[in-house]
Image (cartoon, rainbow, N blue to C red; front, side, top):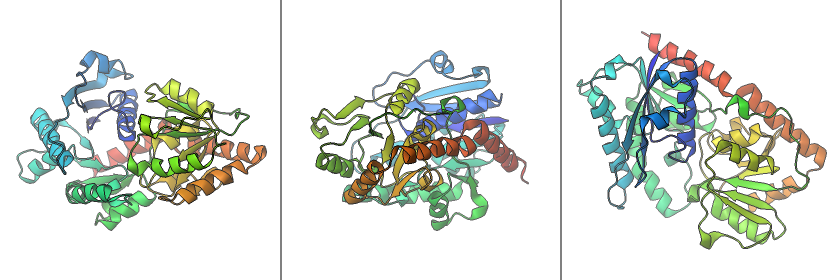
Length: 381
């Protein structure tokens, strides 16, 4: 197939779960020799990478056409991200206008296809099926503060419009499908395609560390639940925990048993960190299907995670601990429950975590389902 993939960035140029998923999806399509036209972007003052540099990141890149843009910047006024996203979508449509009719389908991340959908309504462009993936639909999930509620309120209307105008909407399953149905997207338009990890990331057997070390991986962002987590860590002076991500210096605890790795962009480097820990804690208020949980479970970590988004598709009582979001006491109870497990129980949960990923969430299996789904929508009358 000839597929157009419109993204708001790919790793390693942009850090985030959506960007990691975009990269992996593109790479898996190329490995199967599908033609992919990739549009991605960089932010701020980051230099635009040359096509040769981007090409080297992918396998079988002879089937890849790359377009790199700079994400627009405007004022920091409320709603600026919406304005910038629309401007970015306009730039994409302008760039590809003469080629849009040649693609079998167009896979859109977030708002990247906003202007394209408008132009299709006006009949100024002709396209094959347009699939839109808003990942966690966080704007429709729980918010932790007034500022977050305001941001979500501003995003809801344009997100709903894009989803309604798409031919199909991608869901990771779980509560994401329910959210789509709740905003009026019929089941016939929902395509459930889970996230995945690379097959070579998965461990067959895990030698667990002697000490029970906890790990948090993510941005310092309110919806990630990190402020509640920090409260708990401060109240548990004996807790051994590490943080991967850019944590502001003012928020760091100066304790020997609390470690800060900063941002880690290298996959092998992150796997090494995973392998030094026993438990992965993800106390988010809202999520899609977090890459960090997929990756952590593939390395045999026992996940402690909130029941949001599609997390319940990954974490169950047989391989981890689920707790409710927006609660420091729930986080503390989950950590205490993890610490109360004996070695045999931890080993069982760890083995089950790897089995869960191997059976359902590796790319060799998910890409087959993805291609089958793509072919179905392309061939549908």
